[in-house]
Image 1 (cartoon, helix red, strand yellow):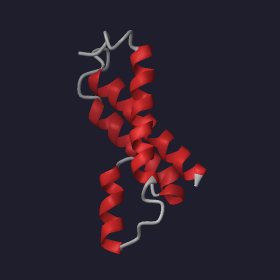
Image 2 (cartoon, rainbow, N blue to C red):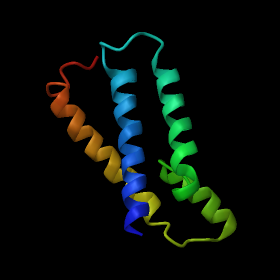
Image 3 (cartoon, rainbow, N blue to C red):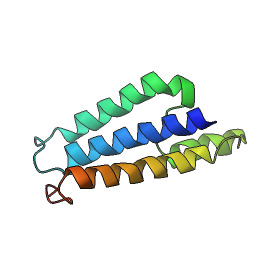
Length: 103
């Protein structure tokens, strides 16, 4: 259970960090965000997807659980993305000079 929570948290952290760095940071090349974010989702889903499902998004886990009526460990897919995204905000805020480097 802890491994599932930790992996999903790390996946979301990496995804949000890439979104901040490629999509919001003014130093990122124009038009680069879609490729960077898409490749990040692809690599994360390919590498960790077989272990955790590679959710990174509560809505992405809720719909299949609803259809299949399988609610086991569903809380992990809500807690981990929220936690991972919040950690990414804190880390990026520190690294980007209190968000001064963002547009």
